[in-house]
Structure formats: C-alpha cells, structure tokens
Image 1 (cartoon, rainbow, N blue to C red):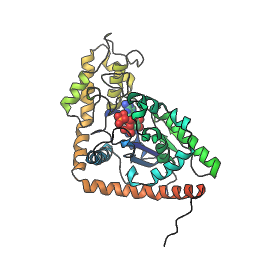
Image 2: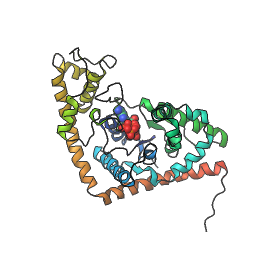
Image 3: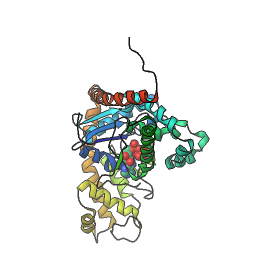
Length: 337
Ligand code: AQP
C-alpha cells in the first residue's frame, strides 16, 4: 500500500461533456496529483440522479463520456484508481449510517441545498437533494482520504464530512481519517461567459458554457460573444471587470502563463484581440482532447475494462473501511457458508 497522502475527488456525469471550468478548476489538478498522492478519482453517477434523473441510456453514455474525457485529460489508470461510484456499493451503504448521525437542521443548512431547492421549490425535490452531501461524505471517508481537492463552493460540504467523521469516531472509536480541504495552487474558478457573476456550469444555458467537445467554430463564437464591459481597458480586476478577468484567467491557464504577463501582453489592445487569442488557446487544447476522447469512446469494452480495474482497487479499500464501520456500529456480521 502506498504511503503517500491519499486524495479522493469526483465528477458528475451530467451533460454530454465536461465544461471548461471542470477541467481548469478540478481535472487539470487531478492529473498533476497522480504524482505525489495515492489518488482515487470517481465518476459520481449516484449523484447525477439527484436532480432531474436522465434517461437510463443517456446516464450510461454520459458516464462513459466523462471517463473517456478524464483519460484524455491525462489520468493514467496505472497511476490512479479511476472508477464509477455505483460500482462500489459501499458508498450508499456507508451513507445510510452517516445519515443516521446527521441532524435534520444540520443538513437543512447546506447552502447548495437551500439554493437548489429554492429554485424548484422544496416540495418538488427528491430527498436525494437533501442527503447528497452525506453521500459525498461517505465517498470521501470510505477511502480514508487525507485531502480532498475542492473549490470554494464545496467548503461547507467538506466541513460536514469532517464533522461526521469526528462524530462517528467519538461515538464508536477511531475509524475515519478526518480529511483536509486541498486547494491546489492556481485552481481557477471559471465564470459563465454570458453571466460572469455565476460559475460556468453544465446546467447553465449553452451560450455561456464552453464544452470541451465543442467544435472550434462554436468555441470561437461563444468566446467572441462573451460579456465584458465598456471601459475598453485590458486589466485583471475580478471585482469590477469579472467578464474580462475571466477571459484573462482562461488564457493564462491554457498558455501556462501568469495572469500578469497576459495582462501586459494585451495591454493597449482591444477586447477583440484578447477574445481571438482566448479562442485559439482553448481550441489548441480542446481539439486534440476531443479527438482522443472520441478514440477512447470508440472502444467501450476497453473503457469498461479500465473502469472495472479501478473499481476493483477502490473496493479493496472501501470494503475494509466499511466492514470496520459496520462492526463498530454493532451490525451482526453475516456468516459465510
Ligand atoms: N466553473 C467552474 N470553475 C472551477 N471549477 C469548477 N467545477 C465545476 N465548475 C467549475 C469543478 O469541477 C469538479 C466536478 O464538478 P461536478 O461535475 O461534479 O459538479 P459541479 O461543480 O456541479 O459542476 P457543473 O459543471 O456545475 O455541473 P452541474 O451543472 O451538473 O451541476 C468539481 O470539483 C467542481 O468544483
């Protein structure tokens, strides 16, 4: 077993492709963290039915798409465990125990629950929206992850995970590692191109979201139509100029440059020049990425084999934690034979 610190992270198979924010804010760091960490990465399909469950065939296809895109982004199944959440039944099994340790008020205070349920009305949501941060806690605790790479939006959920680990340990004895948030250097929050007050998201309108599977002409059109401001000055100022600053951040990320140097490079030029350069840098990444993803998707048997191997590694770890947790709670062990 590795003695490197362990990380766990997940991505939902919602939508037909990853968007730019998923890659720059999360997946790019996952690729780097394969070195130096014992890394577990999970396509969290159980979470993907929380809101508006998709058609079964669509969910299966999206799960393969995300897996193919993670590999195309650089995850290497020999250096990390890449698996599908529903292939490891310990996730919902542990979640049940953690649900029983979570206060109703505590779960009601999760801001993502409040935001998402406010949109459609609490009575129209499934209970899964309410309990999904607890499933997320199970995702993490099963692997005894030391660190969890997260964005600001996930901080409250990680705090819940930490509280649940501490509560379980206090009641039943030391069982779970209490994980720390890991905010990788340079992790970007990418904003919606049409509404730079919101984060870019698969579930937002198409025009503000660049999918990594978008054709080059579509990427160019979306970037050229990005909402900026009217003062005409190329300056990184996320408070006053969120749209323009977002473009500078995207360009800096894809060209591996500092934001300062991109700002200097375009200083005195028009927004059109910056937008063209941004479109080019996104396309330079997205085109080969999309081609590699398609190749991987063309061989679903090989993809499924990689995911099966990842699930085997994941279960080896998850089943040990699970057996320990169930024994501590007092569930009678099933006798085999
Ligand atoms: N705009 C973003 N900027 C930076 N990071 C982002 N992430 C998502 N959007 C941005 C990070 O991507 C990882 C995987 O996300 P997810 O698919 O599991 O869930 P999400 O955060 O809800 O992503 P989306 O695209 O907004 O999906 P939908 O629309 O289905 O909810 C996470 O680490 C996330 O922080």
